[in-house]
Image 1 (cartoon, rainbow, N blue to C red):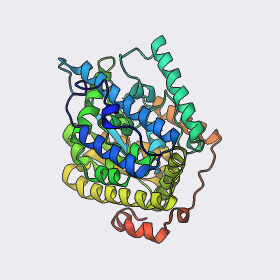
Image 2 (image 1 turned 90 degrees about the vertical axis):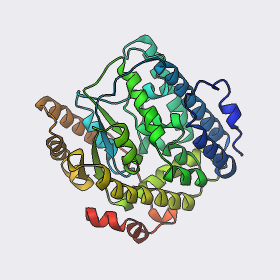
Image 3 (image 1 turned 135 degrees about the vertical axis):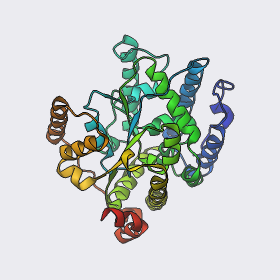
Length: 374
């Protein structure tokens, strides 16, 4: 089934409300790519339509909210980043146990305006609506819950915020879109983070945290734009053997695309995932030496983190000279213990199912593997 939406139908009723026109170029790439390459089914068409219209409506609301307001710079952010499926979520959730951090919640990103108190009846209504939508998504993508748990009241990645600018790897996970993926790989994200910053500023009008805690795997390839937007930002980069990351992400992408298209091709997915993240990692290696000081970033080995999470947490706090209280350590230990008790289905996949060989993936990340001893 061809992608049925046109730029005109997506933007209907939003003309003149979206602020700068920085969304137009990526929107055109995405529509053309989905129209001619994605082969979306009915669920895919409805899902993409809902995602695009919802995100641009939120952008319009944000644009209207910031008009004629002189908002201060957001609190300094701490970014968790690394290849997808490399332990970033567990690290992110563990850091969230510290009350000095604040992360945008899923429902706050999808239904933020008008801003409401988190304990209000309106907030509870939005949370319920959001969980209902997530439940519907799981019906079309039943494997999603076992691979990536999402709930309305959980902290969410910046990739969802960035959909307001139509530059987000969420879209490439939804459907085969090689021309959009190529655009996304090399385009400038300065405007994307401009809207990201505005979104945090809007949330801060209700409550300003001591620090923002943020996460997105694709941040690894956008260091220059991030530092330009957030000069005082700190970064935690967690590293895992790319063979594990690429295989796991290919499997997750296959599950998502299979629910939204009747033509999900495992070999195309494997090739696209490898190409995109090989480029992202190579760019990350080059950019960090130019744009980041040693004091701004710390590297964590996934193997060490899994072996002793709290030891690595202490290492992070010491590196940035952050305060780590005993009560926070206890909350983190409780989180680890509860995770261990929980029933988690193993995420099973075979690299060969995606047309990839282990040696092929290792060779694609030769420099990265040499640096991190994989």
